[in-house]
Image (cartoon, rainbow, N blue to C red):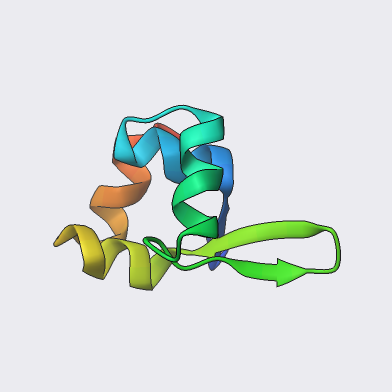
Length: 66
């Protein structure tokens, strides 16, 4: 099965090397893109990888979700 097209905010924070609350602050400040799905917030993988200047696979390796 393929990987999802979105990350949790916690996973995005792990990729950025920041904690959960800082990751949510970055989404609130529009410094990283977040999608609000009712009460849940997710971060699209491709735009985050582009913003970081890495490939999607490199991003998945960085967060360690194999």
